[in-house]
Amino acid sequence: MTQLALVIDLNVCVGCHACVTSCKEWNTSGAAGFMSDDNPYDRDPTGTFFNRVQTFEVGEFPNTQTVHFPKSCLHCEDPPCVPVCPTGASYKRPEDGIVLVDYDKCIGCKYCSWACPYGVREIDEHQKVMKKCTLCVDRIYDAKLPESERKPACVLACPTNARLYGDIHDEESVVSKAIRENSGYALMPEWGTQPANHYLPRRRTEMRIHEDELERADNPLKIDGRLPRPGIKDPSLDDVTSW
Amino acid sequence: MNPAFSVILLTVLIGAGQGLFLALFVIEAVVAAGIAAAPSPGFYPTGSVLALLLLAGGLLASFFHLGHPERAWRSAAMWRTSWLSREVIVLPAFMALVAAYGWAHWQGISGTLLLGGAGVLLCLALFLCTGMIYACIKFLQEWASPLTLVNFTILGCASGVALAAALAGQRGETFTACVVAWAIVLTVAGLLTRVISLQRNARLRPRSSLQTAIGIKHPKITQKSQGFMGGSFNTREFFHGRSRGALRAVKWGFLAGAFVIPALLLTAALAVPSPAPALLWLIFVVQLSGLIAERWFFFAQANHPQNLYYQAIS
Ligand code: SF4
Ligand code: SF4
Figure 1 (cartoon, rainbow over the protein chains, first blue to last red):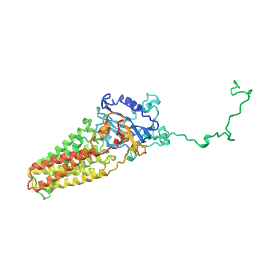
Figure 2 (cartoon, rainbow over the protein chains, first blue to last red):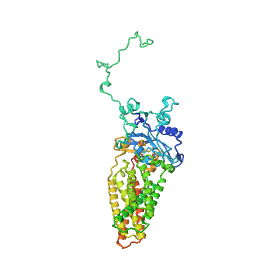
Figure 3 (cartoon, each protein chain N blue to C red):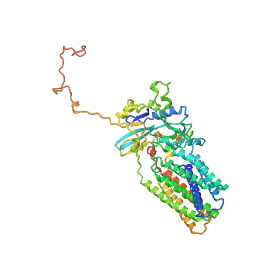
Figure 4 (cartoon, protein in one colour):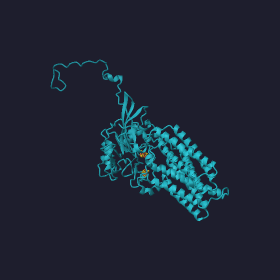
């Protein structure tokens, strides 16, 4: 079984919103229609987005860390939003685990958004249907694109490579390795939704210097000093100059 | 959550319609058992029409909640998993039975008790579906409790029986006082279960926190930016936007309007030999308005964990 997902490295994300804009750009131009905006250049702008980058401050001044936190549909393995949908518009694809909304079936009852604890479903105020991240399902299988570009738009846009994409059920995939080796975790595990998307924690980057690394290990006599000067006639290193 | 009036009206109106139908059926059963005198002709059909009007009103209101009402028929598809889908099936089926029940009485066709019995089953199923729509979302902890089902059922019954009392009083039925007494019992029972659920909700501890929401185990986390400057669906749909004081006022308001005042007025109506029908109608209207406030509070009180992600605009 395949479960496609994103792994987001909070240690690397700089909060630039490139994934937000590239997501909107790709998905508003797709076959499913635009993602509507109201007052984009005015007071109280509002619009539909699949992906948001939020910022949190952890700790107390002066010991604080700024954490930028991108958030989109986590494509839960046990998605609570799917069984509640009365029309079957919300569904989870068995073949790759992507949770999608069929915009032609959705009646805009918003019940699925109530049933998602993460607040990643947004109703489109003009099309009146529920929208959410599709994991760029219209590009990851597009055979017309070069292999390296068959990835979600946000992943391609991220300048720091904070977004990894792959199959978390494949043990050898980059996402599985990242989760395994960098303690990837899921959001709100208390509700048993088993999100497919994972996050990699902030990691403190520090140098560990051991005592013996401060001395020359190849100096058995423990005598530090200048090497004896070569004689005036002796050839120098490159045999060109000498002194 | 941000209460939507369409859904408030839906649940309150169909609850009253269901309660009225149950009252009609119980009256018929009691009459059939020879305990009470039969009502004047036209009592059951009129009651059925009233119940039907309430149910239809609720159904109509629910359409205003949909972005695409023209596709509403699709919502019957997922009855295997979705309580909303089940409600969408059971409500019209119940309405059809209520219509058949009233029609059979009007035509004097026998077997109305059997028809009514089937109606009662659907009526209870409808209470179950409506309640479960809310009770099944486990992270809306204020709703995820059997008390939600109990309250939807008892409050619906209380208002429906109050309406039955008004109808009986209007037509001068002999059993009016008995129906009024039942309305008191149900109203008091509703007060009891609603207060229990209020107490339960006051003691709730949210299982999700900012720590589990972003997965960082530090006691002090503050949001600096939710990712956008204006509002979004997430800031509009999941928070009522009123002050705590307003919420408290609505709470006391509905406790008075839906329970205390109707119970007192009903008791007063019981005390006089033949209460004025106008008083009984007034009681029903007061209780229904109280229940609308109650439902508003029910929605507003539910605290969605997604709100953890939307607390600050940078
Ligand atoms: S994150 Fe929300 S919308 Fe996405 S699959 Fe999970 S519950 Fe559904
Ligand atoms: S809003 Fe659309 S996708 Fe969501 S539950 Fe309703 S019909 Fe299903």
